[in-house]
Image 1 (tube, helix red, strand yellow):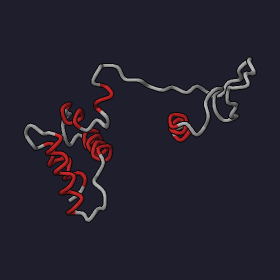
Image 2 (cartoon, one colour):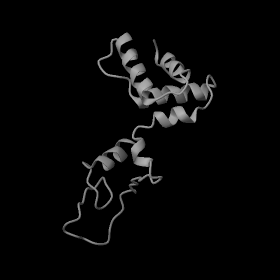
Image 3 (cartoon, rainbow, N blue to C red):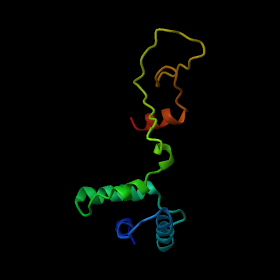
Length: 120
């Protein structure tokens, strides 16, 4: 069973729920001898590839179910961290980190800064 087969299977389930998704992930991992379950992001990537190729139609409910952390956007507010290019700051505050590869006041080991650095 391939990831494409998994996506087709999930799209054909009427009233797909988180429980159905988890069962399908377990079944897929077992059939393919995987140590870990296929992640939602892996399934979503295959879904978008199939969508781009025109093999399937857009399914908003499916996309919503595969959202990594749906609880974060339930309020309607999604926080996003934006890092700017490194730019010299006119101040020389003692407490402010001064990493030459990062904007002033950010350190490279922060999770958000590390993601930004890796996604340059």
